[in-house]
Length: 256
Length: 324
Image 1 (tube, chains in turn red, yellow):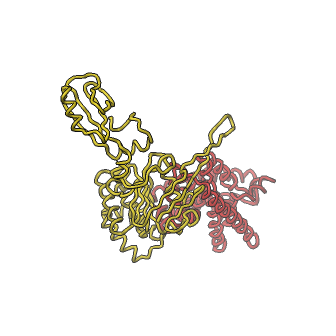
Image 2 (cartoon, rainbow over the protein chains, first blue to last red):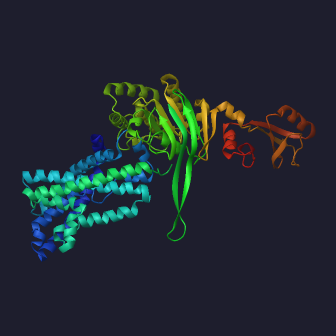
Image 3 (cartoon, chains in turn red, green):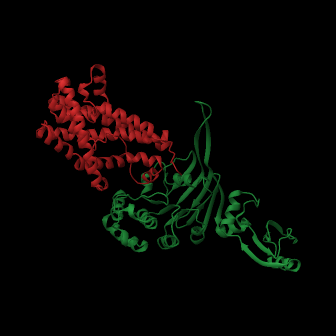
């Protein structure tokens, strides 16, 4: 199932290339902003300028796989009623879309993950991980995709109740951009705001995998980081299961 | 194969009633419907828009839970055993596709095989058979987004039948199709029912489908079953009569013939409704004896007229399709 999903999501390589180009361009803009910030406040949040620039290009590469801008094809299918087709298949709705989303993440990682990192490495000195940290990063990335799916699946199912997803999707986008560390790394958030931001599920999308990549989390701290992600993944997927069951009880299919 | 007893489905609709208040109203989309369909039947399920057809189908396939009453399909409770039931039935929506837009038809069908866990050998055999019957060969390797509507519909039919379901539920399978594509689809469904013995429930607004295919017709209106029986008996039950269109030599007042009412006058043309009990030849002879007639045509009520009268549930002639 996932293989066909991979085929489907890699069907348009030119479009992926265009998106990767945009990711690279914005990477440079963000990099210069972060360099200015770390020049003014060296070692802010325990990062040095190299960490910050690496963070920047790494997270540009993660935009596709963790789908930081939100959205799930299921949202549209619920809005226009095509979800009826999904519900006529002999599969679980959540499991079906999770398989598709894992395939999507793998396809975008392959097609869009490389260019930002390569471009960043050519222009700046980056802090690249050793084999151990890279393996840990692989696990963190998988968990990040699960958390991301858990959040987006809940937003999608909400359309059964609110009938139009635009308000909710914009809110989810703002929360996701801000609290994942995509705009400014969460390590730079001061006081209670930083504490709160680092405890929310969005931290599991960008900040935690980036810290693992940069080697900031090792040993027991690494296990705590992965445990944090896993706990959010389990909680969100569990909530998704419960909401799926509720949907089955009070379902209205849009468009007849 | 299908057993529906007193099924009811209500929806709660919230309406704005003031600045923040919402008034809740309950809509009974399906209101106490009962029917049975035996193995091997080909049943047409008709009704005007919003009558409750789609809601019934969604209860039959288990994606909606009835508010009350019982529904059993293939011996299962659809809402409780949705996934198990999905392996036994095929569903085709004329307005939606079960195929994957970005994949070639062949891959879409291969993915369907995985979903329904059809053994590879059985899949090859059925795919070959369906490819022949539905003439899929020329576009098997074309991505679904590039298929014409007729091709896509044949692909959807193949996808719904690869797992050899006992029951096929069709929701407007010929909508938007041209005459040739329609004929292909109808011919295929006819063979599927007569040769394979697949039970078919067909929802459509295309009465050509019904006349050509269905031995039995269910009509639902306002959430209730308005008719269940053969097409012939339906015609006889609802006497839509015949319409005699008379063109006089020159415009005049409504003609007077005993036992016949003039429905409409438009210049020299007049429309006369003939009930079944009236002899058309006698009316024509009486008209010819009294008036100067340029031309005369007699229209038999077709299935559309019969249904229009049944849907309205009254015998007013206003807006009657026969009077056009």
